[in-house]
Image (tube, rainbow, N blue to C red):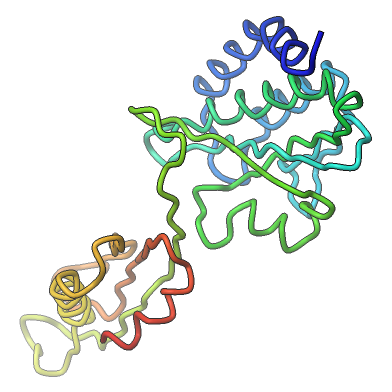
Length: 254
């Protein structure tokens, strides 16, 4: 039996359990860095498949590294398993987790014969953006020794090489001065006015950015009372671009 046939045989034997794992994670959505059940289920499935599993790695309780094989070429499969706030697993991280575990199990079957070391990296908090699990694991040595890392992401169509974008998220604070909006409006500075101007300016900026770029955001704090000219509003913005280095050019467009 060659390596491909061996991997296929192992995957076919694990198929039912992997589908059940995906469904279980989907039915119990957990937010970023709170994925206690999901990370445990994935780690246990890999341990049962013969992987050596280390949990709570890189200073994150829900991160893990599962390893099999001892060959000179080190391949890693990344598993995501956090959900989106309010809507659960609409991004399909339950599928990503099950596929990463399944790919690891399949290749581990032939790892030593093929000269491979296989790692499945549990990367929590992927919806956090700037402080996501992969970034923290990379900074803290979780990818050390890995020659190539890969993952898949579900989509409504098949794409062998989907476009990849980087994202940078940041918060903007708008501060004004409170005053009674009816009795003494001239004494106040309404922070909402600044946010409105900024939101309008961002909308106008969109016609000048590249067609591959995206800017979007939400209001995360919208004042306390309509009659006080609220002095504190807060906005979260996210910028997406397939070329991370181009992030440096945005300030020049202001």
